[in-house]
Image (cartoon, rainbow, N blue to C red; front, side, top):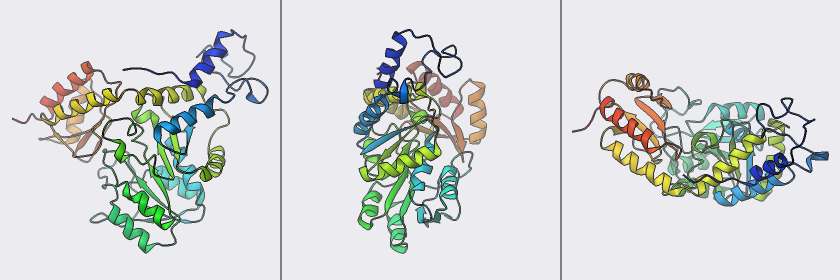
Length: 357
């Protein structure tokens, strides 16, 4: 796949090219990583200067958002910063919310009210890690009923895509806008939707008021890096204030560099996602898959035995899935997965998950 380097990378290169003796933080003075530098010069006017702002603006255009903020405290920071806008107010939320939602509500004294889902117990939070059951994303009809029943709600919080690659209806954004209700979308698992052919129509980043996306989950970025797409210029000042309250004054610029590079690279590698889509189609002929929206999220349901047993057999073959949820073994596919790796996965699944004659 093609790898792009962005403005932050070029700014770091410019510093390294000068060959300075370092008498500034970090204390390792480049020994651990030469590119790990800090704000340099009075008030940081040499580095990072405006390269972060320029990089964020470029990424906002790629996602179709009014503004973009780079996060080095994970996608959870974006969720909490969005909820901070609604301190003490009522926020509707759909089942399947990540624990960061509960933590954000606690920090901001948000009055969280669950959306009642058809056939699903929506009382209480559902954590997305290590669960045996994950309810499906909220439908437009369920959201509309909730909005009609709670005219005093300040915002609606939903998760899309979820851990299993299922998506909520983007029409919910129109429903919220018509009622003057802000929409917060937890798109942690959908940072690639803007660039993967066929998935853009399910992307909340250009239509929600706030949409957090974990670049480390599905793009080629370091763990703990994420994006916060902001849907309107009038929301940026308060969002920046919340991010300052919740974040660090010493962000890791190596992480920020690779975050920008990951977005730029994903934007140029649509054909790589088509390769992953073709792989999924081949696996679907050899194993039973959960029906979902995101073709890069492979959820394999064993035709005999349990998902945990399948997980164990895969580990014995030196294949490490993402997790087990219910009776599904979950795999995250990205353009960084080579054909050779995928071939090994296919052959293993064909045997271990039960080949369909």
